[in-house]
Image (cartoon, helix red, strand yellow):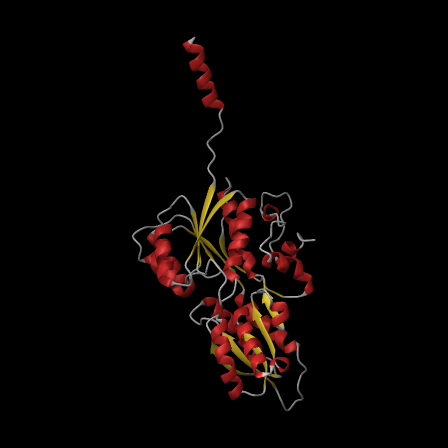
Length: 350
């Protein structure tokens, strides 16, 4: 009887499917794991990544650096030792790039999200042996310009002898996102004859700093009609200061992020880039396929001015429930893949 049993075992081994290996991704999130004065942006990036991971059968691990570069460096040093997992990184102020360059380890599959190293740094990383698959960046220049343009559209044009005055609250100016948004602002303001950009001040993405800076700025520039803020958290801080000063109704305030309560506290908000976390997971999924599609470097004009049209996806984000989105519909595995943009994402919510 032993021979038939041995033959049966051999047959089962031959026809058994190969062992299943789930795709793994580690994301080092530079933000906090809880709500904080800089807003919920980074929490919502994770929200999109996790929802996409669930749809695409990807095991996602998220580590939070709590806006602390020392913690960030340590998390990266640990993560690059797990070479079986894709690694998604946000390179703010070159902290990540320098950590990787100085590391004794290398990693075969890295994607940069929202911020990336310089071209020179990327070349050094590739030369050292890192597998830099690509980067997914929002068009922050578009965001800065669109915010300025939208704010100006909210007020009447002055007569030819005068120009409407604006002040700007910048993010951390060492970050690429802050730099590009400021460039977009300047591109618009330098060409708009009815606008006078009086002052640009760094408030470092912070509600508290914006709240503290705004009264002093208005003392210097009492004719201010517009406050441009590189994110919603700073815009909220400026708006709160204006309310205390009794000036809120006289000055239009706008920001970037589509943060919660922007519809009631701000005059306008530009958003959409939070969704790129989901696209990063789609890129991983496609790269893992047998035909292995490349990731590459892309800048996405993802930003939109908030309007009631986008209320469905906006409310879903802030209710922390975007399960209605089927992220598999955006992959090349779908018979008719959708283009990844806000209108397509919004269409999943009825």
